Image (cartoon, rainbow, N blue to C red):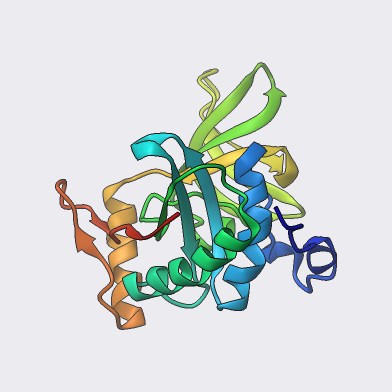
Length: 217
């Protein structure tokens, strides 16, 4: 196995910390992410998340987006075609596997500080790395990101009604938009404004972008 390229310098010299992912994979998925993320960025896209599983004999799922428009099936295919020979060379994944590249979808994970501002006003689920007031999981309306904190409007069930909570972003293990009618409407509105037609309905008539499965080791 050849040594993988060092991404440490690129991370520390990034001009905009708010654009960096605070969510980090673990184990093999992290090794894959360290190899794939700079390549995806060089193509003009952004890594959202990588998941590795034993499904279908071994699957690597790469979720990506782009800052100023909806990512398309053609974009996902380009990422897959570019990563496949790199994975063949550096061999970060033991055995055979399927490579799937997809968009984040409407109920997307929020992985960068800017995501919290982009989707302020919509419902999210949030999980922390450690307990705060006896709990790790919170659900509520996203207020945005300020002073290094994710701001969430939620009802803690203590009879005091809604309150605004602030969580340091590095304390956040994961955050995801919740599928609501308001979110679907906003996603379709943004799609129309961007002038493309990358969303298509699934069996529940919820717009999504289909996965792309073009590479197999």
